[in-house]
Length: 193
Image 1 (cartoon, rainbow, N blue to C red):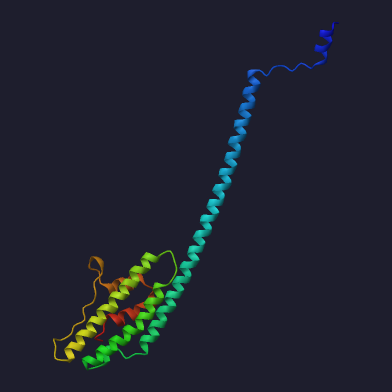
Image 2: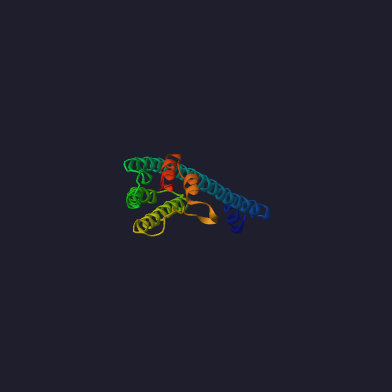
């Protein structure tokens, strides 16, 4: 053996990586990357689903609290109205105008409270608050007409407000609101009674 043969014999011979081995390694690396991406996507999707369910539950709880507060506000409005003499119980137009203004004053805190309620149905609630405001404005106009009638003017008539597409505001208040408000709406919609 020559020196050259001894040097070659000492070094382990590493076979050159053939194309099949390189391809296999490349596929393993790609597969591992795809697997890791899938795991991340599944975990991210799971977190998103859990977050969405939690958000829905939070909104449902908030809406339940809002409905309960609306019901309580309606009951309190009815109590305030029941403490007042109804406008129809008076004979004199001026007294009737005062009674209407007193009822309107009882409604304003209710409208302000409803307007401040939190919730994700704010647009729907705003329509309801606007309908209440329209009813109060129509009643105030009627009270003004009664004052003019008392000083010798034309007879006063209550004109119920109309909403969008001609639907009476009173119907919208009854349809969109809780049942606990229906009695108050009906009373306020008929200031002659």
